[in-house]
Length: 113
Length: 113
Image 1: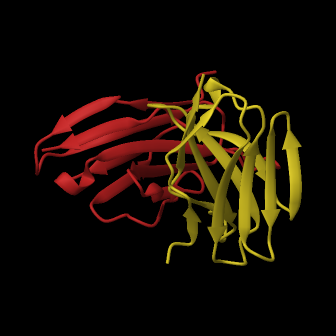
Image 2 (image 1 turned 180 degrees about the horizontal axis):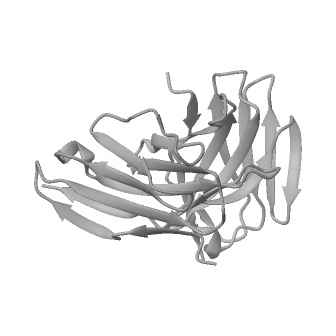
């Protein structure tokens, strides 16, 4: 079993839709939870970051963490064609001085105009 | 401020050939990482360097070597390339600030025939 499982998609939605992207994880020692966005043929870039259970909002994006269920979500409101990208969840496990990120496999999202 | 740069952008190798992927960052970060990204597999850590002069294996180190030349540069070497090493390779550096953000380069696409 992978440490981080992510719905692979692909996901295609009309412009203006609410998008829900999800990941589950197995290691309760994971401490920090992130969402990266990766446009085609580009490197990933950090979108959202949270370390506690609950919701964190940033504009049209909301990151949700449920540590009791080991479940994380990213919601995109009023989705735009510019949101079309691959979204990767990433979880940080502090291990000595290394602090390695464990990534989900990514969900490819297309927002249709 | 260029962030994280990688060279080359694209490379074709024959089985058994060697090559070095170069990475440099100008953000004065201590930690640097090499990942590979394959379809359906997400980003997998190959090697990392917590600080200048130190390197450690990640999840998939076999067939690779690394050198942390100085604080700015972290190179990845394939001594004898195999078709299984066909992938997109990303270098990243980590901001030690509160959000522990990893900044990624644009990637190197490698095809091994």
